[in-house]
Image (tube, rainbow, N blue to C red; front, side):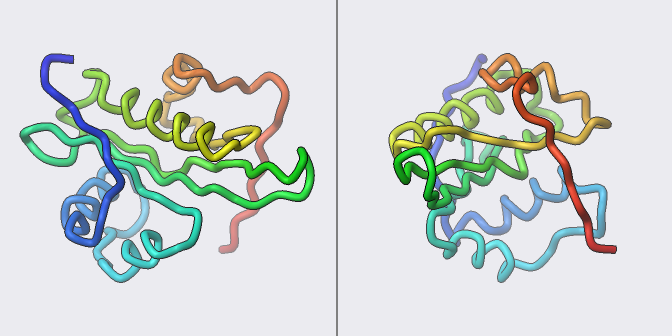
Amino acid sequence: MSEDCRVRPLAAADSDAALALYNELTFGPPVSDPAAFLSVLDHPGTAVLGAFTDTGLVAMLTLHLLPNVTWSARPYALIENVVTRGDQQRRGFGRRVMQAALEAAWDADAYKVMLLTGQKRGARGFYESVGFSAEDKHAMVARRP
């Protein structure tokens, strides 16, 4: 990575940059509702972590820490909406934000961190390189039409 990169939780002031980055991620209709972003930021146990360079927000993800009854009531974590700006990919920014999310989950005593990745995105190798495995779990999704 050639530039300085700092990772921090996003705030309301980051909503325009975050919405632009969400639009690089989604295959659906354009994302344009700042209120939706703010509702995620306000959700207990949820943080949107972003990697910043001198060019602004270059990568982000959402980390949800969820309460749990098993595993001695230790929480578990879910990572969602991982995205790196297209012109900044393969420079280590996604890795930095993923490492920050894992550190935050482990600091919260989470016993596991889960994520799903679309088969069409070709990101499985990236997730394996930061410590994820598809060996012991099978992901399943039900979507509402």
